Amino acid sequence: MLFKQPLLRHQLGPRAFSSSCRREKQRLVILGSGWGGYEVLRGVDKKRWDVVLVSPNNYFNFTPLLASCAVGTLEFRCAIEPVRRYSPAAGIYQAWCDSIDFRNKVLQCMPATKPSHVASPSDTAYDHQISTTSPGSGISFPLKYDKLVIAVGAYSQTFNIPGVKEHAHFLKDVRDARAIRSRILECFEQANQPTLSDTERRQLLNFVIVGAGPTGVEFAAELHDLLHAEIWEHYPSLAKMARINLYDVAPSILGMFDSNLVQYAEKSFRREGISIWTSHHVDKVESGKLFIKEQGEVPYGLLVWSTGLSPNPLIASITEFKKHQKSQSIIADDHLNALRIDGTPDPDVYVIGDAASIATGVLPATAQVANQQAKYLYKRLNKIIKDQPHEKPFEFHNQGTLAYVGNWKAIYDRPEEGGLPGLNKEKGRLAWLLWRSAYFTQTLSVRNKILVPFYWFLNCKFRFSRRCSWFDIVLIFQGFLDVI
Image (tube, rainbow, N blue to C red; front, side):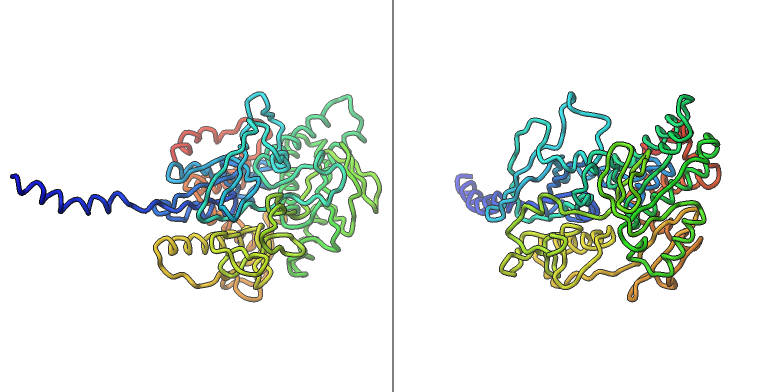
């Protein structure tokens, strides 16, 4: 025994020392929980990476369904996915990133949570977007990173038109959809008061949408369906007074679509009574009225603003990387690494989604692009952490563009290269089936894969899902869906 004990110590000593020197996991910080950031969070290997997500929202917005949620076709829970689903495997901070020290690899973050006495039920997503400081403790905190993914997205473009931020509704977040739905019902309840004249009722029931891209067009179509279904049933005399007006500075709506499809959409809108005002310019917005250069004063009950994207303040504050001259987004190479001012890529910083512009070509600012970039990136990161080569550059495969135009009709524009096999430029019911099938397949959780078609079925078959009451018969299924 006197000889065996030292021998055993000698044999196990080096092994014990080597196991205690285990390499720490590299920290991957993801900024943003949108189409890019959330997809990277889902797919990256959280056992090999120390993953941290920083976002002012603790959920992911399924933006294509927000227009349906705003009018009650779908409930709000259909358009969100909680990021906490991936906790504690990933660290999650509900916070803003105010600045980035790229030399020392340190983020400066500010909590995005509010104390209870500051919280307001009337807050919209834009209120949170334009906040540059937190109304909470005001104490920022540093966060180090080894690899950084910038996927902070962009904000709604207002072109600095006076009154837009204060009086318009936007449609980029489920909070916006909730505020719009409440305002629609409020307009009809106010117009129903016996003390109002017919002129005042028509002003309240004038619904104005500024921006005739896919978001503005789809919201106009969903609102039209609501007015001619449940609103007509519950407010028959007021429904006759309701009007939908769609404005845009461009000479036509849906500028990225084929001209034949645009003509079909415009014809469908005019047939359904939706007024289209192209080549019109908004000078300013006030409470209850906006001023159009070509028309003068236009009263409204609800104003929805959807005129494109403006740079995120974080992206605007970054000076270490090259920027796109028009969009001011960060230019990245074909591996999605941010390009420094001298043109060399930063191997530790990746940029995707609306915050990025690819140096090799211009890509549309769509969820489709951000989602494909995120899938490429998490596969690349998973190979990097395993010390495996991954030199294949990012390639965007355009699946085409869809837009709902109301009354169970849609349009599908297939690109010159790629797109869905067997389909070209479709319109009508076939495109509508394609539109719904595409959004159904893109829903992420099992819960929403059940919930979304369930509401669609009720809407089509029984017309129950958009009742103007705050209570809905589908609450019977609440417990079942919560379990899922």
